[in-house]
Length: 62
Image (cartoon, rainbow, N blue to C red; front, side, top):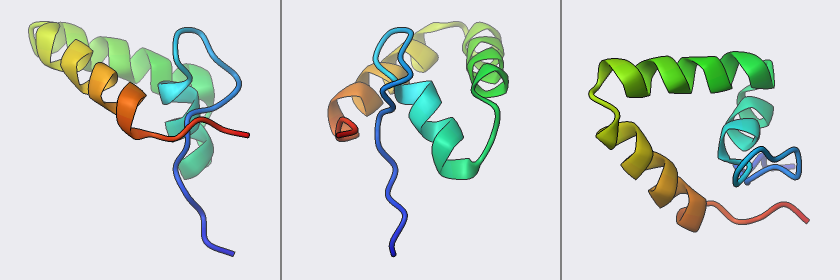
């Protein structure tokens, strides 16, 4: 069975970070913290833009 990246139903905003965590088998909190840190250290805007793009590209979980 092929593993596909999807947005998770374990959502805070759109489920993007939780979907990434499920796909790679990581803790959701760790992925969320890493996302925030990367966004802050990259001047914030690129992180927000990437999140919005992933929100629209990744399919919703069933």
